[in-house]
Image 1 (cartoon, rainbow, N blue to C red):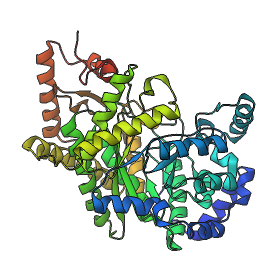
Image 2 (tube, rainbow, N blue to C red; image 1 turned 60 degrees about the horizontal axis):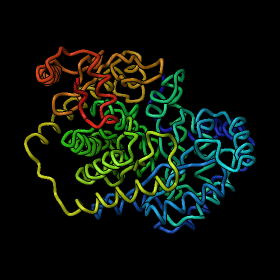
Image 3 (cartoon, one colour; image 1 turned 45 degrees about the horizontal axis):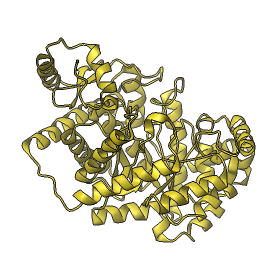
Length: 482
């Protein structure tokens, strides 16, 4: 059974031999050369440094998602987002083949993209481009660049991109498995991500701080805050154990302003609490708010409203970073122009509320305390079933359904939880499945859902869930009957 123990260096290097042989570009990876390169990177291009400064200055930084198949095209894209989009932080979103470790198909996608004169991949195939190709990307822009992907086994991807000078790496053994893969055992993905975090820890031990960011939104569809936060804290604990020191925990916009602000507040405070409870105090914790991850309106004007709301909530929550969407979300992969529009719209909205302080009404504090109680119920059970070990407890909890992510494809996820909105748009839990939530909390959820049912003149049913899933794309938050 997996344990939350620091990976032994001898074992790490034995595994590493196999990892680097997975694809030919792995043979050119050198941690020593990577360290030399990182020591030449100025502070303003270091992700961890910029995120730390954002927290100190109480700023919310902007970062889009973006990635195309060919190196020169990808560089042009990032430069455009840096200049026209005024992005503070830049991404390199990885293609779907690479996320599944299907490098041969990614290679074919590169060749076809060259022939077609346009990207036929939905991201940047970093493994195929290797250290030298990735280094060209990093050195061609003046902002910090992060690897964003969706990979259950990201070991080779991490080796190549970190050696190339990327200063932040996204993902985790739960958040990049359960919502993304169908047949990857939780224990395997956790072990593979222990390797990634141990690699980051090696850089840290040699004076190089690499930012790590678990993926907070999970499936991005009606995810109750307690589930997202509990999993984020678990992935943070696992990363810090391996030597990570700069950690950014995320949360995906739910839609209700009070609940979203409360969620970021609870995430920040609980993460500090649990990290210190485990004996860690040498860490830099920041937060990231993801703009709406669900269905977008096809009408661009309406899409801009969704983006603006996400921007405002990100700022009011005090998140150090916001992941920005584009007005083309409903149509597929956005153009660089649409990406830049989303960034500029977000910048304007943030600027208008930057100096405003949200009042802390009773409703906000009440929601913070509710979320904290729910998260503690989940994490206490993880520790209990793991006999004090969060890694062992995580595996056992997914097996028993004590951790459960709604609408996830993984066969290792029970998928019994049924969330839906209450009458004010808060995400509540109708069916908790096997989640270890106490009766008083579930009674509150049922009460809030009954209020909606009475207001709409219908019984609580799964129809509400489907109505809620499509509501924002149709111009509403709560899926009301016509």
